Image (cartoon, rainbow, N blue to C red; front, top):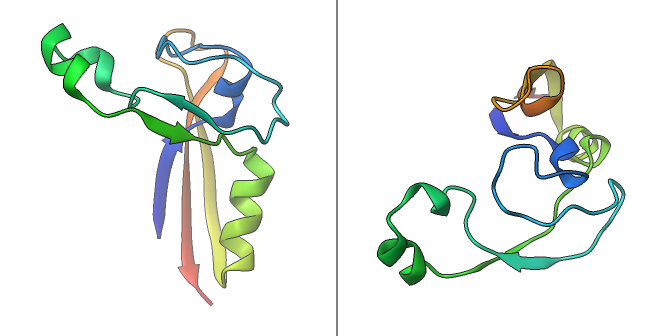
Length: 98
């Protein structure tokens, strides 16, 4: 399995400029918003895109779900945000089935 996604650190700040709300890192709230890449489309197309419900997980919730579903964690990498190389913006997990 290869999982590459936005880093949960983005919960505390809109560091990737996706116009999403900041919240507690440990928040379990679900919120509605645009798809992550909607802002890259023209305004008329963007307005036609459906809203999504989000729940942002912590890094431990993500890693533990990999382990608890029978995967063996092989590698975990964090990648800098494209807006600020001093903070995490994305992560990649590589895992294999038991």
